[in-house]
Amino acid sequence: MGIKGIDVSHWQGNINWKKVAGDGIKFAFIKATEGTTLKDNKFETNVSGANAVGIKTGAYHFARFGSKSEALAEAKFFLSVVNKVRLTYPLVLDLEVNQRNVSKSVLTDAAIAFLREIEKAGYYTMIYSGKSFLENCLDESKLKPFALWVARYNNTLGRHADIWQYSDCGRVAGISGNVDMNICYRDGLRAQVAVTTEKAATVKPVSNKKPVKTETVYTVKKGDTLAEIAQKNNTTVKALQNLNNIKDANKIYVGQKLKISGSPSTASNKKQYYTIKSGDTLSGISKRFNTSIKTLQAWNGIKNANKIYAGQKIRVR
Image (tube, rainbow, N blue to C red; front, side, top):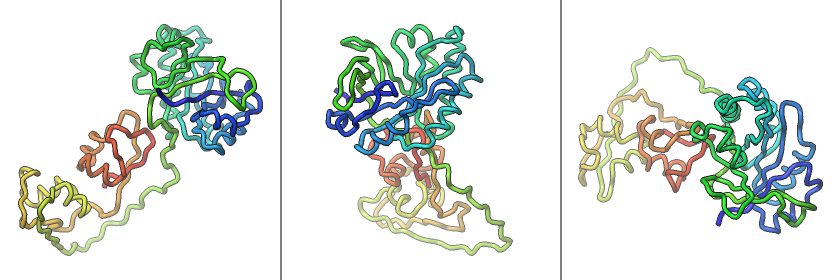
């Protein structure tokens, strides 16, 4: 069935968010900005009220741009406003007018520039548009990397979308007058920002002293796998294979002695973290950092390897 939600702005006036939550609303997208100068005067109040009662909050920007440079200016204005509040759902580009009457290609490229600028700040992004505008005024093939929120006031949406805005005249307790109604079909949507406050790692000067060789040996037990042994000893399957001349990682035997560290490794024992970017997969990340999907899941408590999100910070070593 999906998750029930709304989107609001100053047009809804003063909202009783406790009553809204009591009416089964689970998420709310709240207007933050428009163009490069207009800030919705109810934005902070609405975000605070919704957060206080456990409703997930996202923010949207109504676009007026017609070029990449204008899109970037609007994105920066949007970020300057949303950075001051706590959000739990994506940041949305509301693109439903071609104010500058530019071509489909130009408008789409401008939209992508806006969305990438938001992603650079560490947020999960989404694009909103009416079904007809999306299909006729934008190049959807270029927008595939982004989550999609589509408006169509009908009994059926008739196409794919992560969120469907199915009515602009809904009624919800706590709001006087009509309100846009939405259904979210996608689990795991969030606005979690990447950690940006961490200091860069300090590079220590290289010592001229030769490291002392050390060696740790592990005896394989019944039920052991090389992946599990690697995880327990803070190393990788490939490192164990190289150190022990193991060609097939699946062929180890009970009682086998495995070197865990034969000489001082250049790899640090310190944990290493990676911030997921749009388009990343756990499989690709595991290959990049020479580890396994199973190890990444275990380190980061990830139950479903297909459910990761841009901005998520995970341990990779």
